[in-house]
Image (cartoon, rainbow, N blue to C red):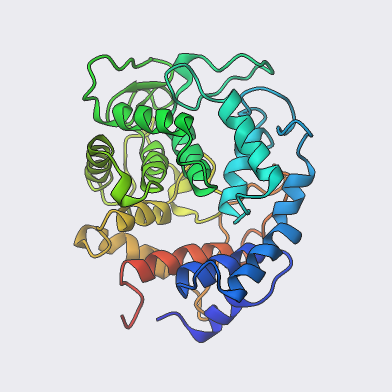
Length: 337
């Protein structure tokens, strides 16, 4: 069960990490958006902590650092801020957040419909070869979460994402330097299927309400589940340039383009596999990191690389604890469940 101590910790008013309280109310306690405590917590997100710090660095035209597709410079460019704002609980109706969303939609989508990248500060869209599962999935999750599902540009990005995964469209173009084949194959991973990209892509598609998912999207989710379940997520020995990345085993937030064991569990639980015995080792791994107070430490961080720092590495983390309790609860795997 969620210990009273851990829950009280997540629900306390915290000027440094107000988004934790907001998400705990919504996701752990199932409070509704019109609940007075939820409204108060959402307002606090926009008033204190990392979200206003990120927004303070925004250019009046809607971008961060320099104009263009927003991938560069890691992790201060535009796309990273939009991903972070969503993860931190920013209010999608805020004028500055909406301006950032519109900027990304206008400058980051390539001719094929994918959100792509370019290192150049130019108004030209990124090249067709720039579509990557990690970037497209991250931005789909952020933009849909911030209220842009009905935008035609989002629908194009969804179509690209689903077709890039299934390989069912014979006219779909793959590129050696980017998404190099169906089933999450990626040029940045020696052309091998990338599990980091799979997690991000599936999160983007999972942001679509279940009753609005097309047949192609559903098949893409099935392909993704089969791939992630083809290995033990606790070992995470997915194809990766000849070795297993240690990043899988260091829990943190934000995750950028990489992933961790906890994110794989988040995705597979959302797909209905929370009780699948193939995930037993991975859930045991996550639970093994919990301290006596029912908390998890921050083991991976982008602090000193972003506009706003989030917690302290090596210390108990409200954000990681929230992530862990959320997926354990959703999977029915909390101790004593």
